[in-house]
Image 1 (cartoon, rainbow, N blue to C red):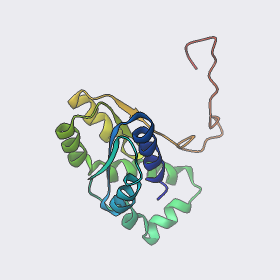
Image 2 (image 1 turned 135 degrees about the horizontal axis):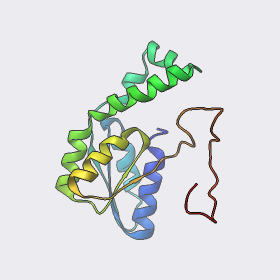
Image 3 (image 1 turned 90 degrees about the vertical axis):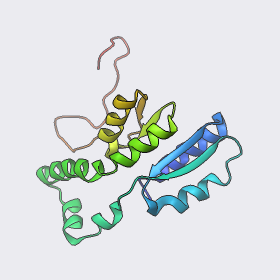
Image 4 (image 1 turned 60 degrees about the vertical axis):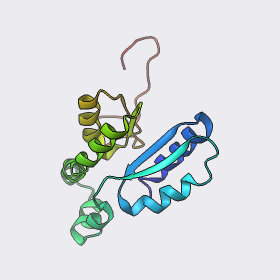
Length: 155
């Protein structure tokens, strides 16, 4: 729920306020939730397309739960790298829908950044990350949020 809800809210805003036709490409588990959100849209449209996979099933195992509860930086890095592998399986479906539907822009979440970049590059469709995590890995070396220095063009 936590991964899909912000995208559903964004889709509702883009459809209702800007009149956009928004397609959410996600796992079948979320189809009903997305279709339910699409019903009250007064302008634009929200539709669902399947990406394949079942993330919830994978993360419900005992080993997965232990890994997610670990405070080890090594375990967190391993989980991050593994998530890249786990989500790359949806690339053929995302590529197919992007090629077929030719959206003006692809908006992607943290877990499918590499998939979106591959599709964006191959199909010449702009991609925008909708990343809600303030930092990926905890680190004492970096602040979770870096303030922009408006007097310079770099951070």
